[in-house]
Length: 459
Ligand code: ADP
Ligand code: MG
Image (cartoon, rainbow, N blue to C red; front, side):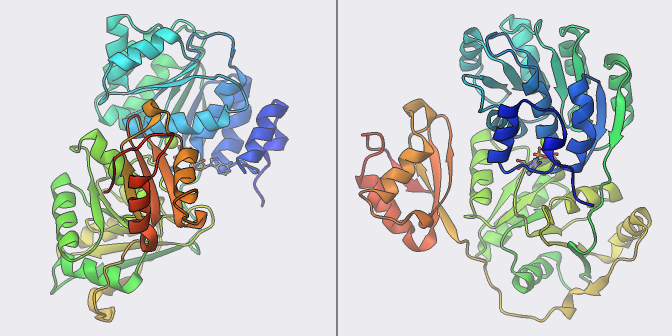
């Protein structure tokens, strides 16, 4: 069965044209199930895994209801972390780009509050924020939610895990009762039911099947008896040579130690965990997504909801005792028709975790011994790209096109050597192919961007 097309639902033609230009033709299953109801104005409680296209589902809904002339916030999206907030805001800006001057404002913690206050004074159409920071604004009186007509709780289970129930309740009480309330969650713990019954109006419940077809995923477990897990991991990486991998650990400490170990062994690898400063987390995610760091070592909390494209492999360095977590992690790879590898290391004392996963999925899973993989010399998986950091960003009015211009113009570097560009408030990152990276650095240091010279360095 083919997926239904966006043209099957009644959308304003300018929005439909924009979806085409984004190359969104068919709806993902969650979009097909939820959009007709969202457009009718119904409240929803929706369960679907990461990467299923939830943002566009609620984003399209709230955009169709937007009054561009009013600069009072009309839609509010609550989400657990700043990274997710940034991703959601980015996706909504793309979806709304056919409307001129739509302001999407992120109000998340871990960032100075002053600039947010002054942005709020100028007005905004759509707010994306974390519960803590939104409450901060409410108690300072710098934010009014009176005109909100669409309220979205994204990754609601995660927000509850982080202890945001009271913050969320306080926020919702400030929003008019006639609103539409959309609740998205990967799991349904008790708190979700409570939130829904307290704050939703006759919600429709929708679910989308979590499991990918098995042809797309290659799942393999490896016993590591007689070796350390670290040695076994090096062997996995050397054997499969995945170009982009997320390695899951259960604790921050394990992430940190494993990253250090892999770096000692010559791999380019970074840890991502909740204790890191915002700037470092941004940098790590940029390097991973622009292919200058092929290995990310993360806890489930840190990786939750992040839209990481083209992930070739997921490695369970530590399996989690709950089998649902295996399914969540697995869902990070094999996306959009591509093949994915799910590799898991298993110590003897962890056999019960494999048994639980088998029971949960109701299928056979292959388990080999790590020594079954040939001992090939370690390869350290050098990345295709390197990242340059430029000391200018949005505040200096630097745009991606300016950076491309500076590299391809006088610097004479061919465009296909330039990868992803990420512009932040006061700095930018550009990925360049490793073979021309030194040249790019020298040229950018000497040349000008927007008529100015910026500091440039490798990260
Ligand atoms: P979720 O919130 O369910 O984890 P996202 O909303 O982050 O998923 O979407 C995952 C990715 O899929 C994003 O990069 C988004 O741009 C893309 N996407 C969403 N809907 C479509 C569609 N209908 N066709 C193609 N790509 C889509
Ligand atoms: Mg999402």
